[in-house]
Length: 274
Ligand code: MF3
Ligand code: CO
Image 1: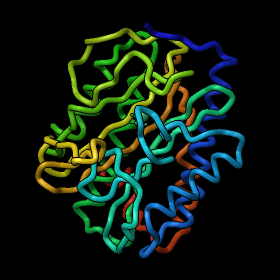
Image 2: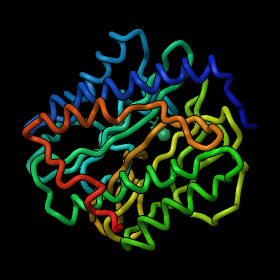
Image 3: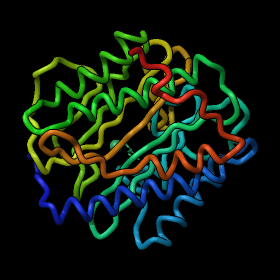
Image 4: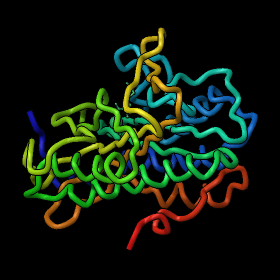
C-alpha cells in the first residue's frame, strides 16, 4: 500500500532528512586515517539523540548498531567496529533517524585520502546517477523511469555493476514503505509516481561485477569479486515537474571539501560529456 504525504507531513520529513544530512556533515568533519568505524557510529548515536531523535537502524530486524558503515568492498549494512580507516579507503555511511515520528534515511560515500582515479570516478558516477534518477522522479513518470536512468548511466555507459538484491524504497512513518525502487529496470514500467510520494533513492554501484554475498554476520553485504562499491542515497518527494530533495548534500560537501583528509577529486560535472 502506498501512503502519500500531505504538505505538512513532507515538511516534517524534511526535518528528519535534514537531521541525517547534519549528522553526516558532523561525521565528515571527523573522518581521517586512524579513526575507528565504531567511534564514528558512537558519534552518530550521540548526535542524533542530542537532536531529539532516535537512530532508526538500531534494533531494526535486530540490526545491532546506530548506522551502517561500509568500507571498500562492503556494499551496504557494514558493521561499525575496531577497523581503523586508512589512506585510500572509501567509506559509505548510511544513517536513519526517527524525528517526530517520521523517518529520514540517507547515505554518502567518502574517500579517505586518494583511492585512485578509477575509484574516484566510481564515486562521481554513482552520485551523478542518483541525480539522474531524481530527474525522473516526477509526477506522471513511473518507478521504472528512475531505475532505467540509474542503470543506463552506471551500467550501460560506464560498465559498472548495478546491485540487484537491494533497492530503494518508500519512506514515511516506517523505514521501508511501498514501492520498492530498484536501480535497474525498464523505462515506463512499474508504479506510477504521484505527488506526495516520498522515496529513498539509493544506487549501490560496484566497480566490477554486480554480484554480492552476505557475510556470516547476516548483514554485511560484499562484492563477490572483492572490488569496491559505492552507495549514495537521497530522500525525495515526488512533485510535478521537479522532485523536492528533502536531504541536503551541500551541508556534507562543504565539510568534505574543508577536511584535508578527504579526497573529493574533480567535480562530477567535469566527468559528464557535453
Ligand atoms: N538505507 C538502508 C535501507 O534503507 C539502511 C537499512 S539498514 C538497517 O535499507 F539496519 F536498518 F536495516
Ligand atoms: Co534506505
